[in-house]
Length: 202
Ligand SMILES: C[S@@+](CC[C@H](N)C(=O)[O-])C[C@H]1O[C@@H](n2cnc3c(N)ncnc32)[C@H](O)[C@@H]1O
Image 1 (cartoon, rainbow, N blue to C red):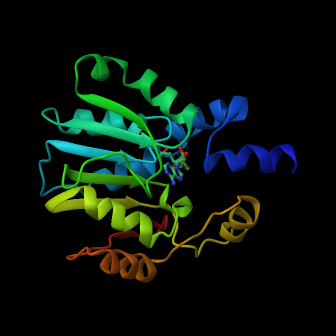
Image 2 (tube, helix red, strand yellow):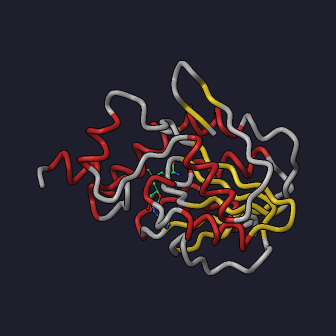
C-alpha cells in the first residue's frame, strides 16, 4: 500500500502519526457538511446525545454549543480519535458534560434507551452491517429518540469509486438503501434531506 492509500485508510480508523494528521484534517474538512446536517435538527431539544464515530471531536463541541443543557457521550473505536476528542472537549469533560468512550458502534458499552439523540457524521460507510450497527443505535435510543446520519455522498459522485477502491471496508449507500436498513433495524419516520448541488444528505 502506498503512502496515499495508507493516509486515506486512516479515515476508516485513524492510527499512528498518519492517523493524528487525519483527525485534524477531518475536523476542518467535514465542518461544512456537518454544520449543514446539524442545521436540520430543528424540532428537538435533547438532553442526552451520543456522537458515534466521533473522529477528532469537532462535532461533539458543536453539539455541546447547540444544546447548552445537554451532555454528550462520544464514541469511536480508534484510540487516536478518542485522544483528540478528549483534547478538543477538555473543558466540557471537566465540567461533566462530555464523556469519551473507546468502542465499536456494533457493540456499544452504553445502556439501553439511554440517549435522546444519536449522530453519525461521515462514518456509517465503515460500520459493521450496517444493519447490525443500526440495531445497536436503536437499542441505546430512548423511545421517540432521533438518529441522524450525515453523509457527503450517496455514491453518485464521480470520485466515489476511487475512494471505495482505496479505503478497505468502505461502503457507500444511497438514501433508499439507508432507509431500508434503518427500517429493518426498527426505526420509523425516516426522513431524507439532500443538497442536490453538493450531494450532502442527511
Ligand atoms: C471519516 S471519520 C469521521 C469522523 C467524524 N465523525 C467527522 O465527521 O469528522 C470516521 C470515524 O468513524 C470511526 N469509526 C469507523 N467505524 C467505526 C466503528 N465500527 N465503531 C466506532 N467508530 C468507528 C473511525 O475511527 C473514524 O474516527
